[in-house]
Length: 96
Image (cartoon, rainbow, N blue to C red; front, side, top):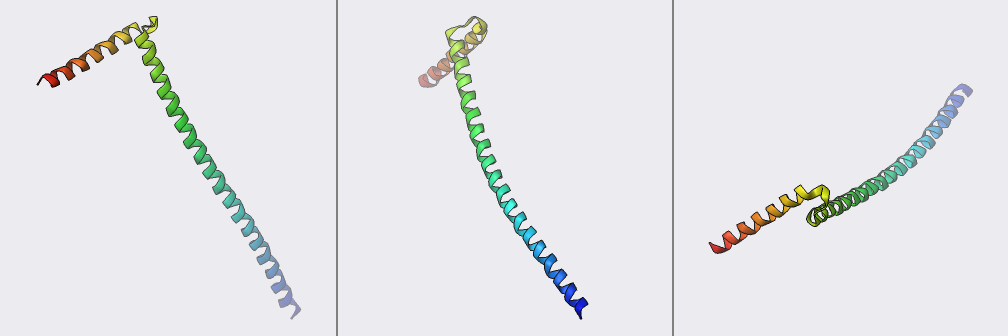
């Protein structure tokens, strides 16, 4: 009879250990989900910052091109020609 009691006690101990381990893993899982959400938010914020900086960079490039910096004279001429074509197109549509 003592043998069966020992087996039951051993099983109870093992089940208790498994349940404790399960609880620890669930807590760790929740922490990892929280960390993942924080990381996703950081990535989203960084993507928005990148988009903002890209817009500022493009605006700066256009400004430099319009101002006629030595490096961008060709680009400036192309931009001006494109603007003139757009204006001509608009005038053509208005006169129709």
